[in-house]
Image 1 (cartoon, one colour):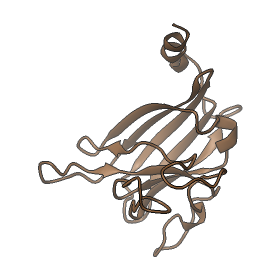
Image 2 (spheres, helix red, strand yellow; image 1 turned 90 degrees about the vertical axis):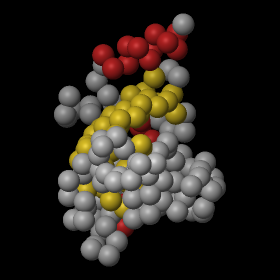
Image 3 (cartoon, one colour; image 1 turned 30 degrees about the vertical axis):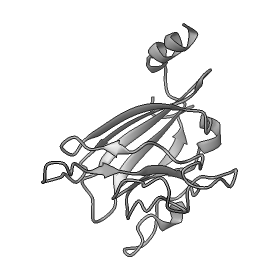
Image 4 (cartoon, one colour; image 1 turned 180 degrees about the horizontal axis):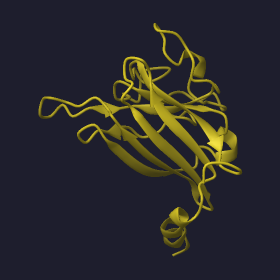
Length: 166
C-alpha cells in the first residue's frame, strides 16, 4: 500500500525539477514541460508536449524518442540543433538502451503527448542542469549509441525548482 499511496499523493507536492521544452527553428511550434518528483520508490517523470508533427496516414501516428542528455546547454547550429546538449546521460557507461537517460517513447495524439513513468535510473539531484532532447523518430532500443532516433527537434534544461517556478 505504501507505493500506491506515494504515487497518488506525489502530484499534490511541488516537483523537485522542471524542464521547459522548446522546438528548434524547424519545429518552432513544439513546446512543453517535464516535471521530476523524487519518491521513496524512484523518480516520477511527468511529460506534456504540444505542437508535435502530426501523422497523416492511419497506422503511422508519430512516435518520438526522448532522452536525458549529459550536456547543460540547448545551443547548436542550423546543421546540428542542440548539439551542445551532448550525448545520452550515461554515468555508468552502459550500452543503449540501458543509459540512465534513456526514457520511454512519446506517442503523439494529434500533435500532443502526455506520459508519466517511474524510474530508478536516476534521482532528481543527479540530473539537475542536464538537458532533455526530443527526437524526430522512435528509439529502436538497439542501435548504438542512441537508438537511431533521428534529428533533435526540441530541447530543455533540467532546473531545480527549489527557489523558482512553483
